[in-house]
Amino acid sequence: MLVNKSAPESIKEKYRRGVMRTFSPSGTLEMDDGENWENATRTAAGVVARRQKLHYSLGLNSNVEHEELPGNVHQRKFNDSNQRAFYGRWLDLVSAEDWSQVPGGR
Image (cartoon, rainbow, N blue to C red; front, side):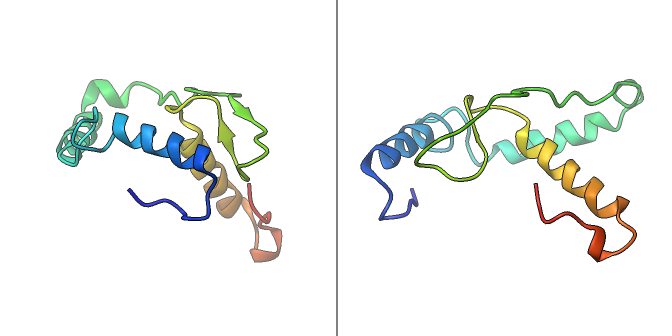
């Protein structure tokens, strides 16, 4: 586990618990899940999947202000905020006429 050594102990403990529940020897996700994601991507290219719209509203409006953590912090561990931020920034970039029109960030 890598964590900033100057982080408060409470943050280190939350991070440790989060890692234990996901990518770790006792977690629910492991490195071999990459194969699952590859197959999910292949399946999404099928006829039925292409007829469906993607749904990225998991955790919508779950962002909170946090006095110790700067940036975008959300109430729930699992949500689509990263995907929404990625596509929002992509939209900023492809919509701008030139670099001077690209917003500073999201």
